[in-house]
Image (tube, rainbow over all chains, first blue to last red; front, top):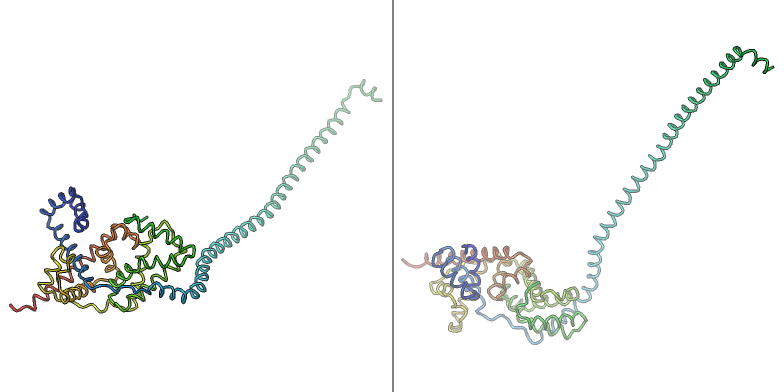
Length: 174
Length: 206
């Protein structure tokens, strides 16, 4: 058993509340340890000073003490019940108000951020639309130019084909 | 929660508290009568002013009455009662600023022998009235070096015979913090005692 553990038993030893086995262990240690002997002396000395301080008798409550307590209660009741609910309400209100302020702050933040998002969203489709439109126009222009080029080829080929038709085909056409 | 040391009275307390919480004034009167002596004794140990004890004790019970509706029945009534009493005494001592009146005491060999002899105070009946008064006044002067919080801790430990665990509930501190405070308070008191012894020896003719 360590010195610190045995030192912790001194309170109980001074109060005679250690078991016989523990008392024997501690007494063996006390015979060797000056620090523990010094601490035990301090415990006993201070306990004696405290006990000596009550060598006179404390005032004894009178027979009517309980009655006087009730009178004091009656005198304070109005004040207590007038102020105490208000105090309790204030104590309850503070956290509620803090929560409300927090909730309001969060609400305002979400509202502002969603407003900004909405604004961004309304701006972005415009951009998308213009892009889409431009790309659509590009596509249409590409299709148109392709059609033109195809038509041109067809006209050219028709013209060319017309010039180079065999005589039998020309007769059939006539 | 606080370990129940004396199961009988505690059970009675719980029954009385439940009745008080239901508005039974007779139950509160019984509760006051049951604990009034203990409160008077503790208040006197703390403030040492016989004329003030009744007023402070009255304040303690008034506070208990108004706080009873919020008292949790599973908690220790004794620890709660001690806490309210000690706090009420602090309030009184703070107002009075009693700490400014610390008086160093000279300790005669006879007084020192009395304080040093184990068990001498537990059987004080053999002392005559004047000797008892003298010893009490010397002890009181020595105790005046302690701040109210340390004094209340020692009073509850040595006079009310409360355990470290019970003290942790009253002072809302850990067991190690209570032990440390007890250790420091004892050393402070012993230092005052040894100073008194040195002063007395200097006064003696060589």
